[in-house]
Length: 111
Image (cartoon, rainbow, N blue to C red; front, side, top):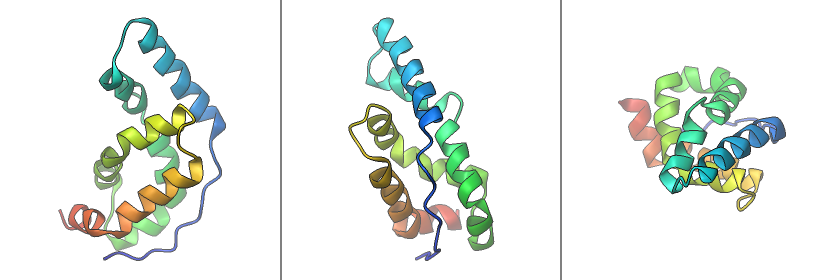
């Protein structure tokens, strides 16, 4: 398993606001839950934010941007719930760190 002490990034309210606007745009068009995922992945805003916060810690243990995106794909719903204020930022970050440091993170790192 991977154990890296990652800094806890501040909640990016500006990114959340942009994602919420994208979600609202899709919902007005009658989009369903899967369309909302497009709002999250379209610009990879939260993924980029976390990668930029952690890449100096993750690169030495074998993660690159592509592997990090694969790991973040396990958290599409969590990102959506955070954007909709159903999940707290602290909970989202803890979930991502737990995945990173667990068996899924190890599998992705070795791929």
